[in-house]
Image 1 (cartoon, rainbow, N blue to C red):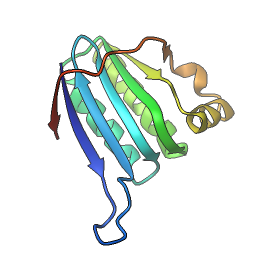
Image 2 (tube, helix red, strand yellow):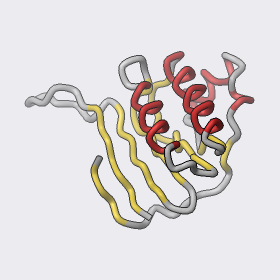
Image 3 (cartoon, rainbow, N blue to C red):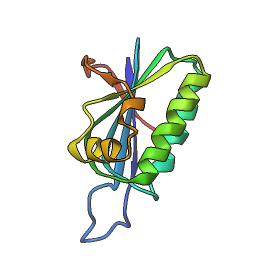
Length: 132
């Protein structure tokens, strides 16, 4: 099992803030993508791009761990729907793990919560970690 990381950052400087969105990809028996930060119109495309790359290996299951998502909007819904379709076309299933409160609030308010199965299991986070 190995983990790869991708972060979208704001400009560096003395007042540099943490990354806007960080993605960690863990490949193993189950593919897990951990999201941390803001999922908005400037970052949502990263989810669909990474899921597209992941789908090339035809995984049976891809889990988006959304525990650390601090902001979520309509662009996030679009990204999740595209990711779901991409994984489905590759013969797999997309699940959400621990959607943050804001994520669930938006999915519920828009009626899209039922579209995404929730993963109720945890995958150990051990293995080699590489940057992407």
